[in-house]
Structure formats: structure tokens, C-alpha cells
Length: 438
Image (cartoon, rainbow, N blue to C red; front, side):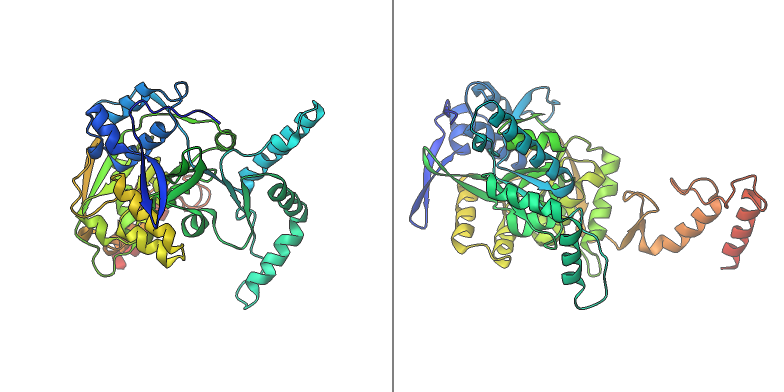
């Protein structure tokens, strides 16, 4: 086991339900460095805790920790950091080749006289079977059961392999098909929010973080779990204990005020945010939601905002832990003792948001009055091409008669293109005439 260093004297303990826990205190780091850690974005505080806990003098140094603690939002970062997630999330399309690699490693170790059983994921890893699932029957009471049975028969060899893998490898858990979509299963069942590990220091508590081989992994950002999607190679490296290298990310803060009006849904909100954030430019950046309006959104709304991170181009769309997180954990059947631990740890670390929490500092800020969000549609091809429901009729007519491609406000060419009989000019004239006549 890697020996942890504690250059800043940040190792502390707290007690919940009569049980002591060790943790690496951000407050202690702030006192030791004089940096304004408590005003960093919540997402940066989680990255900072990971650096603090993994300081070894090689992959993570005291200078790395100090650099993130004193982050200047006005300066684009040029320093790389080594991020160690708490766990890895796989789905069956990219996850099964990863498990095949582990099996091949075991064969190679055995052929060279080593103990194959030593090859295991270092980090807790969940593989959710969902991408291969097909719908052969629908609209009947037994459709789910029938589709699950067909799936077992169709992919019998795959299921036999995964059963072997789960029984053979430590730290690997397989979630069977027909359970749900991977990022939804992650949110509702797999996410801990706060991890507990048995370590040399005793029971060690730290934030739940995840990298997943699915682009919509950031859905779990809705309950305060920092996580994002990566490729299969990156996920495999993390499983085997390697850090995820990344530049200290810029963080775009989205300040929410007010509350959604009646009739406006989470979809309307996220399409509005997608349009805003695409225009602002958030590719390769973190997005973090804050402000008094955040408290009016439930976890379903926040998870939708995180889920659409790939559509607006950000790495994450993060909402910090708060009372809504605790309510959601209770609603989804998490153990009451664990919910108490989540609350105690988040408050001890300054990771618990309330409406009176001072605003963090960000690389840039946007503001959205939730009361201004109106029902809308995405389209015609891209979610950022948002059309308010009140303007759909007019927008459709304009697109129909504009000519050209159906993207960027253009219309539709007839089959055969401009030179076809009854081509562009005739088609546009006919469409315009129909539009005028209603």
C-alpha cells in the first residue's frame, strides 16, 4: 500500500453514530496554507481532497496540493494534476473488453509462473449490462420478463463469462440486464456520495467520485457525486490503480434564481441551459450550479442538468450536496446510518450547500432566472437549437420555406435535389403558398 504523506497536517477524525472516522480536512489545509479553500468551487474542493489524501511525494506532491488550493480563476491552468477516483463504472459494450484484458493478464502472469489471482481491479468497479439489451416484445404484461429471457439466450456466452469474472475478480460487481440504464442505476443504487474505506488509519471517509465508460456518467452530479465519462482505456487504467491525469479545470458557475413556473419541466430547463452554455463555451470545463434557485430544484432536475453535460460540452454539470441530496438518499432506500454519515462528513468538510452558503469564485459566471424558463422543443437536430413552444408553428414554417439544409435555420430540399423536377424553386414556392394560406 502506498504510504500517505501529510505535509499540511490535515489528517483529522470525527465521530458519527459512535463510530470514529478519519478524514483529510480541507479546513486544516486552509489554515496551513492561508489559501481561501472555502471559496473554491465545490467541485474543486473535491479534487483537492483527493490530492490531499493521495499525497505520496511522486504522483501527488505538496506543490500540487498548494497549486490547487491557491487556484486563481482569472488564469487558465497550465498545471497537470493526478486525480484518483473512488470507483469505476463500466457498461457492457466497452466494459467487457476491459474484463477480457484482465483475464488475458491473468493468463500471461500464470504462463510466467506468477499467481494469476493477484490480477484484480484495484478500485471498486461496477459493470452494468444495458447497452446490449434489445426490445423484442412490447405492450404486453410479460414483455419485461420475455425480453430478459431472450437476452439471456441471445448472449449466453457473454453472461457465462461475466459470471466467471464476478466470481473470480475482487472489487468487481456485475449488475444484470433489465435492471436499468447504466447512469440511472448509478444514481439510484450504486452512488455512495461518501465512501468509507478500511485503511491503516481505521475507517477512512472521503467523497464518492467516479469515472465511467459512458458519456452520461455526469448524471450522478445531481446528488453531489463528482464523475464524468472516459474511454475504455482510461477506465481500465483507473481500475488498475493509475491516476487520471488532467489539467486543473476551469469552472463556469451558473447562478440560478427563482423557481420553475408551472408547466416548465426539467427538459425545458436543460434545453435552456444547453443553449446558454453552448453559446458561452464550456468544452473541457466544469460547470457548477449555485445560487438561491438551486434549492428549488429536486434531484431529478439536477440529475437532468448533469446528464446533459455531453450535449452542452462540459466535463461535468455539478450540483453540491445539500438537503435535497439527503432526502433523495432516504427516498431510494439508503441506510439511515449512511445518510447520517453523508451529512456529517459534508458539513465537516465544508461540502454541504445551503441557501446561505457564500458564492464560490469561478472562472466565469452565467445567471438564469428559473422563472424565465418556458416550455420548448429541441431541434431540428441539435439540442442547443431550442425552439420555445410558443414559436414552434412560426419556426416550422420558416424552416420549411427557407431552402437548403435543415440545420441552422434552413429548409428542406425535395428528393433529387435542386435539379430534380419540381425542384427547389417550385418546392419553395408551393410551400410558401401553403404557409400563406395557413
